[in-house]
Length: 107
Image (cartoon, rainbow, N blue to C red; front, side, top):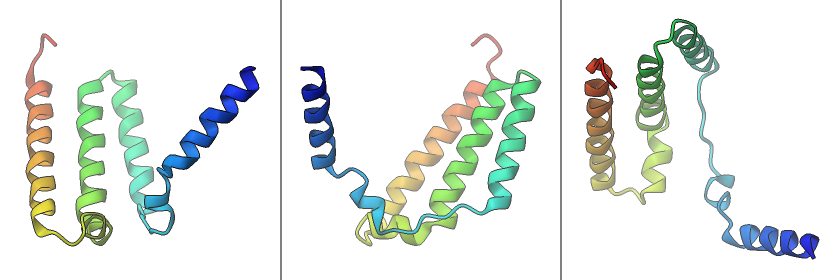
């Protein structure tokens, strides 16, 4: 019975086709930048600067999606420039919130 429920769950996940959105797309991250974020994250972890590591990872992610893969994001949003502006505003607000959190000593 457990195998049947697992099979049903697999069929359900396949039916969602979550990866279908990205299957025919090219989303690239330069290798040098991947190595750089790995080094930065490792140094932050070694020295216990978890908030700084989180902020750096967020900065890299925002850069990769919004700057490096802008065409992919535009295509994902149907070419709507308002979607790009919304992404920029929300991303900047989240980055500012993370930066303010970085400045707090107690949390």
